Image: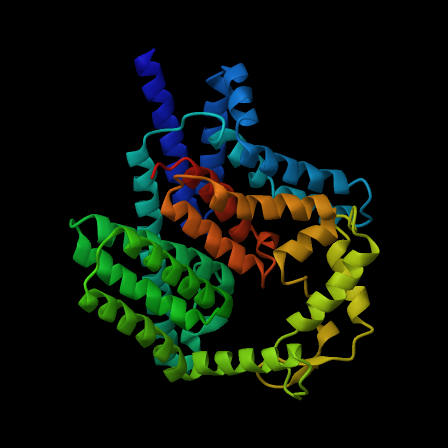
Length: 410
């Protein structure tokens, strides 16, 4: 029986390792990601003991919430008109059903193996950052255009997905910090990797995740410092590093312009007039909230919510800055740019409440591992300004990391 249990644990570990590699390769080689899901599912099915798995499921409200969240989207297919879009989205989100079901209803493997998977993820993010910067260097040599290092131009492996790459990198930075603080082995290598990933995060210029990183870092450091006695010199060093990071954002022309754009948007939110509107979110949220108010219980269905927003925006004469000129807001097909609004518009208030439950509950549980709370914190802040579950890169990271981290021991 012991050997059989060990074999099952090995299969689960192999599946999850394949999935982590798949996160790195998802845009150009799908087999590791798909293979990881298949191995995980087959192992779960053929280990039987379904009564125990059902009991495990019932005992974990977050696992039930994930399943209910997906089924609610499936139910919305009944009243959506754009069935093609709806079914495509259901396929996109299938891991939100499968991975929590497989990973949260059985004992996967040891704590050490969970930590190994996190190190593997962080190492792959260091590699991704290095590849992206190297490819941008080659582009710069041929074009002499420094813009190749910033925002949408920097990601090559997660092509044109700066917000998703920023989410991946921000979490990887905290995994690396955990390694630097808790282990002496490979510390210098991890410090080098941290510098590389942090540089990439800055160049990506995703304001949401730069803010998320700084907020979560500050809160985490204060929490950690309450358990560990730090000298005044240590506090000074950390404070200087923190302000150096903020100063770097103002020194680099590309990131400085993004900060200026943010100030313009804040002024717009306070009803200040500014011809150069840099971001359509204020309109997307306003029109989106108005649509939700018209159908708050069930939303518009998975295939119709974004289409309804696009119809409503045709009556908006606002223009926003695309980097070169002002263009009408309805010229591009935009979603709600807020995952909570997006979910509410798609499947109604219950979907919004389930998503909010998944994002908030971990902070009210005792003895949760800091990395779990950090991941949820980064995710929560990112969800406020982007509809992160509208792309595969967002769905697979949440579907995998949340179950993996939720059972990580403190």
